[in-house]
Length: 112
Image (cartoon, rainbow, N blue to C red; front, side, top):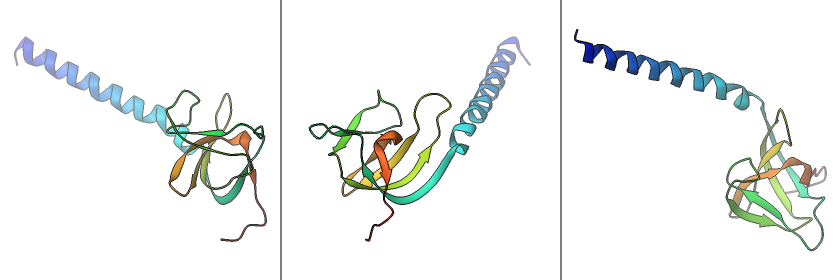
């Protein structure tokens, strides 16, 4: 095996180790999520404002829609954040994305 081949082999093995480590680092975030499958109402939003819906569970993520206060939404699942706020994946008609969980109130009396 030449020096050039050894360098390529070492680089490939380092890449595999980094990829595997990244996979394990992401795993706890996925495990921290929980399924909800229930209706909730948009709350804690001023009557003149809207709740932004994001592509990913982060305030800096791209906005994909918005809901007015009091709007009922279907909550698919939520993720628990170590620091900061929890986020929930919600859907209503053609809008689907992530919202901050503190702006949702579960609805106990809903009928589809």
